Length: 119
Image 1 (cartoon, helix red, strand yellow):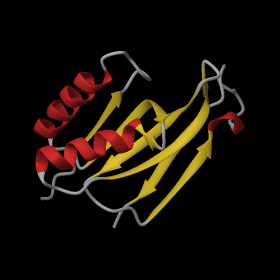
Image 2 (tube, helix red, strand yellow):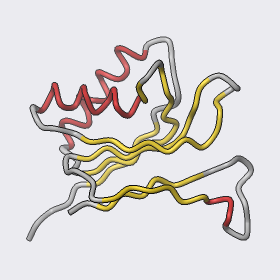
Image 3 (cartoon, rainbow, N blue to C red):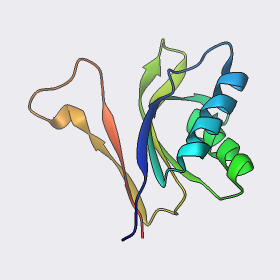
């Protein structure tokens, strides 16, 4: 029987110790060997998302390729694009966003979900 390892992790936006923090997060995730990891509070720094940065660190640590998909939900303190993301050891066959504000009981802040389809 095949095992699919899934986890979720809140990246807590940006912090002063991001270099150390993301290296440690990648180390922990490498030990878990997730096939798929859902991420919250992902931000855009420069031309990359923190999900892409984490995927690169995972590649360095494991020697395996990782793919990422980011969905922006709002501006963090009117400074950074923030949202959710998925990283995976498997390429995606499809990816899209679901607007959760269309649900009859809307959340307090704009929210979306990242959806991916893998082979």
